Length: 207
Image 1 (spheres, rainbow, N blue to C red):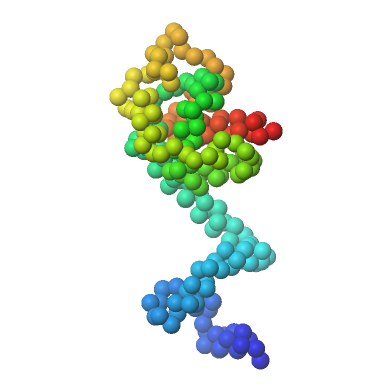
Image 2 (cartoon, rainbow, N blue to C red):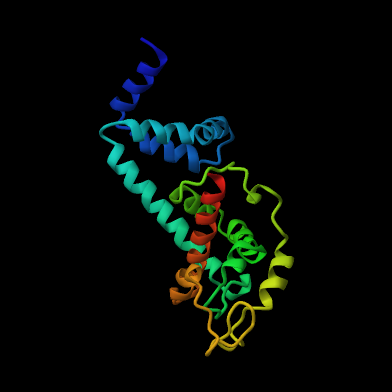
């Protein structure tokens, strides 16, 4: 009888489940379990893949993975929408020049740094290759530089102005490219709208 069969038989005879064994290894502070703990941790992805490919476990693993992703995105977007990150501004319009210039790249850098998983999801949703030769492969600006520049156009003390600092009255911009940003009603929607516009432009440049 092989060692694995011996272990399985022993577990069955003593009513020890895989879950109970795994939890004991992960929670234990016993030095003798350290190698087993490290082994489980290093193979965590492979274990999940095996469960995902199993017909009995597939649906449960998929549901858990989706819930984990949703919770991660919610936390990152909540964090990203805080005023401390400089993206909580009242601007309601953006010109095509601004959307294609450094302004959106700075916002992109902020999103990428504060919410990397959300950034990855936006890329995947828009089917933008990770290495598409775009300028997002270069080093991103430091937080301080981003905060300083965005501070000029953001904050709760601002009146209703556009991204160039002009009062949005009779001379309000009607650039079609700015509608997704203009229609967004809260900071989270504006962040996602700007990210969507930026990557739509990235897709065009990648073709």
